[in-house]
Length: 205
Image 1 (cartoon, rainbow, N blue to C red):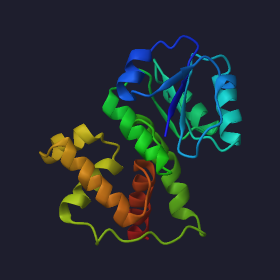
Image 2: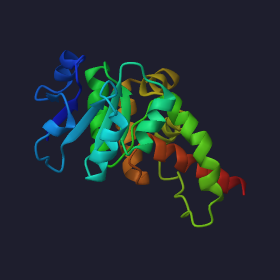
Image 3: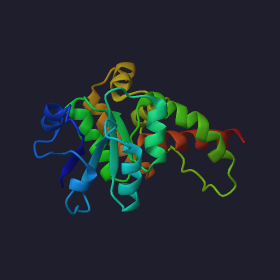
């Protein structure tokens, strides 16, 4: 399991190696070796035609996360449209890098809270009205605290914001969120939020 960072200047080299001690930093996608199934490739937007690189890699089945020193929603949308499974700050804290990697490796999608809220607003009505959409499982199997965490996350709150709202630790939030993902069968925050939105829409129907 290796993290490959593609960046022409390796501008965040120390940050990346602090997060992943065995991180491999390359100047171009052409330098990538044969990849194992659980390897991740992180593409810096500083790379020329970074979106084209993402499309080329994802077409080969490679899981890609895009990093940017100046994150922006439109750039994130381009990254996702190009096939990336995640988008985050190039100088993020080590803990966030680990969380992104965990979500992506488990088949989820990682985006920031602002874009998450934007995606939910744009996609939830379509999913709720889609006749072929499967019935959403009820949230009754969640504990009261898990339900509170779920609703807060569905609003686009970060783990820190959820912790502050519920007066619990971020570690506890993560533990509850992991249990929620497992019980509801969703891989990431976006799918969880869309699920909550669909449940609400069905309840009002």
